[in-house]
Image 1: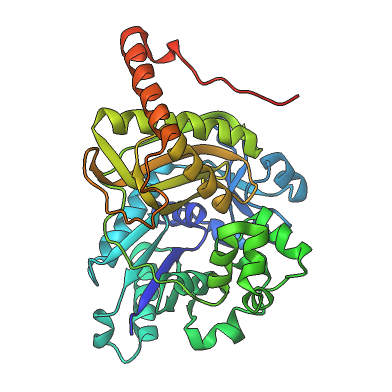
Image 2: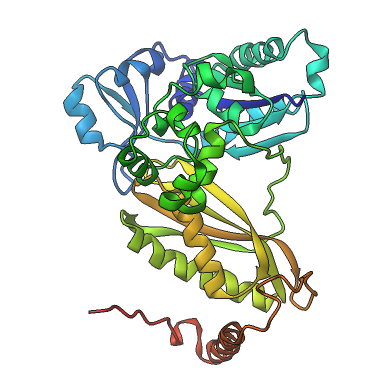
Amino acid sequence: MPVIFHIDVNSAYLSWTAAEELKNGAKRDLREIPSIIGGDQKSRHGVVLAKSIPAKKYGIRTGEPVANAFRKCPGLVMESPDHKLYRRYSERLMTYLKSFTPVIEQVSVDECYMDFTEKARDYHSPIEGAMEIKNEVYRRFGFTVNVGISDNKLLAKMASDFEKPNKVHTLFPQEIQVKMWPLPVSKLYMAGRSSVEILQKLEIHTIGELAVMDPRLLELHLKSHGRKLWEFANGIGNDIVEPEPGEAKGIGNSATLSRDAVTEEEAAAELRKLAMSVGRRLRKAGQKAKMLSVEIKYHTFESVSHQKQLDRATNQDEDIYQEAILLFRELWDGNPIRLLGIRSAKLAEEGEPEQLTIFDPQFQPDPKREKKQRINHALEKVRAKYGEEIVTRGMYKNK
């Protein structure tokens, strides 16, 4: 049976700042007093990026304006973010973890998955190995982590989100009904705000209630994402730990927005621009993509991403945009967006033949697709001669 760990730094920005201050002789520990990270004068919004447990008791929330936090707790201590420091601590953590196994998939600056299957043979139980990692991280670096343990990435991730800080939790398939099903459906991985609102209208309030629903009904209301949430609620997740990013050899683009996007329309407009950029670069390279991923970075600097294997490799702007908007809808939790990105992966040569059957709806030529391809090639010739901004996509709205 696979043994997968999900390792998550507890309140990473604040923990790393506190550890560095203590190393340099500070008399206080930010984690033990009402404190936050945020409010950098160079930032655009001055929001709370991380908070201590004592600050949480005042009702202070990650992502809220710093001014609100000080109204809730006038004696609040605030430190500015230091992203260079965070990268250093993150690199030290990953270097240490790789001393156990190279099969580590880092998904953000403060969390990763580890395939502990082979290494588990050196311990009486996976819990013993996780406890060693947790305790040694604190001894070496001065900050704490949570470790979730299961036989797949999904359940390991859910387990690490249980009680914090500095804890080890298991969530094996046989524990799902007791440990996961009683939780609010909003705690389920990939259950964003809009999905939760729809589920609640269906009188689905817990993960367990979602798990026993007919997935076909969920698909009626949430399309393919409904079935995916049903699978997650039942602990179904077969992703393997990938030591190298799946899109490392892909083509992509991202953009930090001039102001946070707060509606799907604003995000969609930016995704369309990114899709055109990625499509243009793929065609220029003579490549088509078999996989796409979308990244969202929130105003809190938290990043999430999701990828999808395509039914048919493509380098066409509209195809890329349509897949990207579907991924976006599955990912977005309704919070303000600072950055958006699209990346392509699993590239194939543009002229590479595709395996189709007579039952494949794509077997017959698609006149519309061929027309779009001709238009794209014509536009690229114009842009190459007169500049990228000479032609832009028009927007039509029904009155």
